[in-house]
Image (cartoon, rainbow, N blue to C red; front, side, top):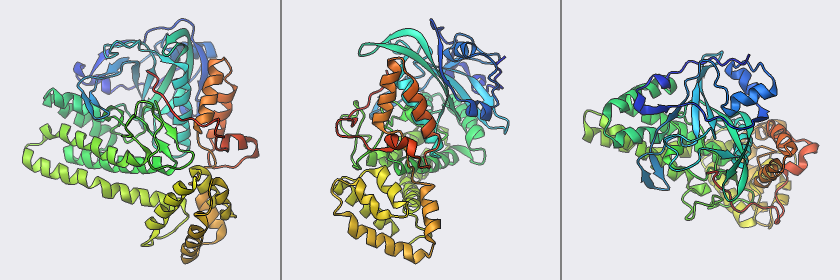
Length: 479
């Protein structure tokens, strides 16, 4: 029998943090995928047939020890305040404690309506489930903090979106689902008691060495500075960086209209709902700082001296730019194979990005080619390679200062510059095939993305940039 090592601490918080409810059963669940390595990491014993597992991961059978609930939170969405959001199509089954003592949430996404559904159906259709499974697991393989996908199932039901779509449920794993918006929800209600309970819970769970509201704020600022820098290092655009989509744990969450840049553009936007470029690629650090300023505001009621707190919190939030710059420069230095810290390293990296944008260079292919024994081949990834040559000579001169062997440089760079990312057009291809009943492209892409830093001749088509006719120009939320 499948067994989860549940130990549910969030469910012990006051009832106003959530609504207790079970998932809504589905008509005819079918297993798409189950992540056995992740189950092993969590200490979950998956003992059962595919049909048995489908019943569990669809929400038809609630495993022993679960305490299902839907969390409440608020948040700023595209800068506009929403006083109550919450899990409108998700149910937290509970928390498991892994063999190494780490604690993780296990949540069903697409599990039916909750009091927070806001007239929605509480369901998910197959496309967003396939996207989140592929991209979240790819991010994990790239070494980027992220929620994970434990399983995906079809429901045997039809979901109405732009038209009739096949229904599905994703089982998502996270260090927690505590969001900036969770703090905002209670601060807006002037519920200081709940804020204090949430602060204590979050510190104990994620930052046991931090003290008080300022300690939490500084820890989260650092976590997100490093997270956003790691996103940008692989060309990732979240697409919907609302405060309810920022975790206190510093993990990537909610892969709705996310995408990866192909040809590099600093102002690139894919999300169909981001009409003004608020969450464009290069805007992500500024948005993270804005969001964390909202966290600081939410924490103010817990401080005994408001004026002193405002001064300390303002200083902390204003320091985010320096934290991010340090993290981003480290990412870029590693991507260029540089050891040590030269005074002009950042300028060298930014010069490459600017020239890449001018020359229409593919972001992933450029850095991967630079990581090889013939770095001049990076020009092959550019539509107009003329701007590349002068920069290449400057980079080689900088490498010479390090005195690192060619073999060591290549090994270092290939360990941080992926050969494979979840190209938008390949993700869409997998979704289209799955909707038609063919999960082969999903399975092939998922297996390939598990080893993103390894070149393989059998996946060259997955590595290739899209032809103009294949390019994905817009991505969409699943709601």
